[in-house]
Image: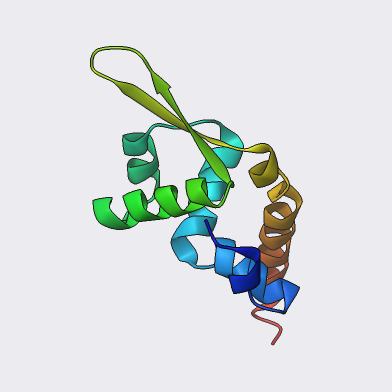
Length: 110
């Protein structure tokens, strides 16, 4: 987990530090729909490597954005969920989606 004193001064830079980058945002987008297992996320995120997905999930869990639920089954079942804190990212991602649609509709006008 990142310590408060290690976070950037700028709040926008803090947000980028925690959820910035292509893969973390796409992982969050997937988990906004429903909890998912590792391989479900990997299938949904074509092009992500096993190592990058595992590292991103671990980092977001450490930062309190997602939770990992382990079911006592054989073989072991693990699901990833957005935490309460992670759920607060929903409006941000919906706004990014809206802006992306707007931009795509304007691209020919530019």
